[in-house]
Each structure stands twice: as C-alpha cells, then as structure tokens.
Figure 1 (cartoon, helix red, strand yellow):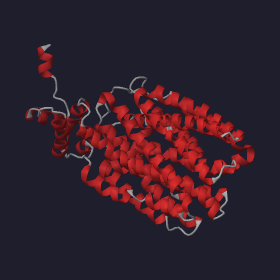
Figure 2: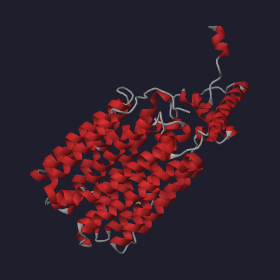
Figure 3: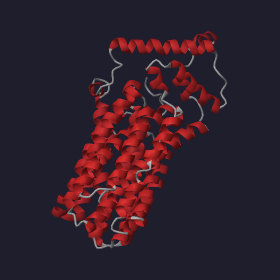
Figure 4: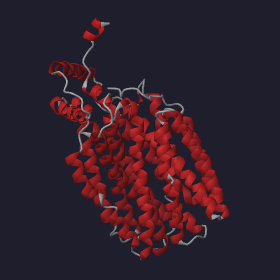
Length: 462
C-alpha cells in the first residue's frame, strides 16, 4: 500500500480545484457571474411588459409584436452557438464580458426605437449578446466548482435568473404603466450590464482548464493557488506541481497530435457524444419552446382575458416570485436525486402546471391563475436550473463551451418559433389549446431528459 501511495501521480490543477471546499472566493465568482445572469433575465423579462404596453400604446397587432420577441431569440440562437465556440478559443471571462457589453448597450439604444421594425432589429442585436453570455457563464462556474457540489452551485447560479425576472416584474409593475413612454424607461434600466462588463473583465478569474489548454501554465497555477489560499490549503511541493504540469502538457500534446483539440460542432455528434448531444438538444428545444411561449405572452394573455394592464402586471409579479423556491428545491435535489431524475421530475411538474394554468385563464379566476401560474413558474425554473447544471458536465474541456453554446443555440430556435406560434394557437383553440400544447412539449422534454447520462459526483472530463 505504501508503494502505491508513493507512486501515485501528483494531482493536476483541476483535480486540486475539484477537492477544495466551497470558499468565499467561490462565492465571489458565483455572485459575480450571477449578477450578470440576473441582468440577462431582467432584459428578457422586460420584453413581455414592453409588448403588453405597445399593444395598447402603438395599437400593434399580436403578429407584429410576436416578431419583436422572436427577433431577440433569433439573435440568442446565433449568439449562443458563437459565444460557446469563442469561449473555447478566446477564454470564458473575455467572451462573458464582451457579450455583457454588447447586449447592455443595444438594450439602451432600443429604448429610442420609433417603430416596431426598429425595435425588432435592435432586439436581434440584444439577443446576440444575451445568447452568448448564458452558456459561457455556466461553463465558467462549473469548471471552478468543487466536484461534490458542482451541480448545486450551477443551479444556484441559475437562481439569479429568478432575481432578474422578479426585478423585471417590479420594473414592469412600477415603471411601465406610469406613462406611454414607460417601456422606454424600462429598457434604459436594462442597459445596466454595459457598466457591469467592466467589473467582470477586471475581477473574475479565467478558467484554469482553458488556460492549461492554451499552455498558460504559470497563470493557471496562480489561479489555483489563489483558491487554495482562500481555503487554507498549504502550497503543494514545487516538484509535484512540475510533474503534474508535465503530465497535463503531455496529454494536451497527445490531443493535438490526434487532432482532437479542435472544437467543432461535428465533434459533438461523433461516436461517444452523439446520443447525449441529440437528447440534450431535444431537452433544450422543448423547454425553450414552452417556457418562452408561455412567459413572453403572459401579461398580454391576462389583459386579453379581461384584466386591466396594471392588474395583469401585478399577477405576473406574483407568479414570478415562485421561481426562487423552484430553484432552491432543484439545488437541494440535484445532489440527492441526481441530475437526470431532478430534471425529469420538474419537467413533468411543468406539464401538469401548464394545463392547469390554461384552465385558469378560461375560468377567469384570479386565484386559479395565480396559483397555477406560480406552480408553472416553480416547476419550469427548477427544470432550468437542473438543465444548466447537467449541460457543461456532458463534454470534455476542449468542447465544453462549444457543447454548452450549441445546446443553448439549438434550443433558441424553438424560442424563436414559440412567440410566433401563440397567435395562431389562440385563434385555433384559445388558451386551453395553447397550454395543452405547452404541456405536451414539456412531456417530450422529460422523456429526452431520461436519455441523458447521470454524472453526479464525477469529475469534469478533460
């Protein structure tokens, strides 16, 4: 046994990170990424209130406003794919900061829109930045999180989406109804990420796995030591560090020699990754379709059900508040039940809640609407938390950003279709048909989730 210990290879930098306890430094990374995530949610959430007011102020029809929402999602689809790939080539932190800057500035400029067409173009640019940021942030946090609680930490990152959604509901409730230009002031508030991007670029660490993949070993070592000092872990023996670095370099050279270093979408569909990629893309697509189809139109649907604009905003705020406990329960379950079971159960709950909400809109009962809407919000956002936790775990380092970005990008195609599908579905069968369709799509997502591998407690693949 002594010989085995003596000959055991020294831990690599990523293995050292995996075994650390959660420290204040991890917390600062989580909060730093999370605030950016919350600002994303603020921007996305504001669109539903902007659409609801423009339907009244500009007398725009549902079809035209649906294209405004879908333009943003079209930008998100392209941005997610590009952002993930760029993060594997330029670094997680660099792309994260750049995308915050792009969509923050574009959101501010969109407040000056003079027509639906102008707003549509600017929302596309906003989507480019927004879509790029989300998979990059989850990849960065996943790569720094201690192995035993990695899923929980990523779900907590996703919980910042609820914070931003609640902020959007508050802005929608308190700012948008104040005047006919309330939607413009709301979008100006959504421009805050432009300033936050400066903080992100200067203060957040770069991924150690990315640094090693680019041969920047001294910088990678300094980053790991900073996290070890925060945990009170003594400095490793320099000889062990050198031996581990040599091992990492040899592995990287072997990957380069075999041509496996290059990040490309085709690599996601090769043997060994094809099944999980297809299942993951299906989950992302189905979840995007039902979530954005329901929540982008939520205030407008309540107005059309006979509720005043301010009252519909109030109900939307109450429904949105249920997102926070949804994330909390998901974060607790994901390390107990595992990723696959947690994701599937929350998606099943979303299907049931969607059908109940459709019945509530028909009944006109405010209590029914708020309770079933809160259940949908709770279950759907709990599912989102689990989905963001499992996605980066499915791919090796060289493909992690690309895999996460393309999953989000493919999913965004469904979010483009979702707002456009709402008007014709309402004509065909009203709210009952609309939310039955959303429920059925959630069931498809749950079935696809069960085809994903269970990776609770495992190390991220190199």
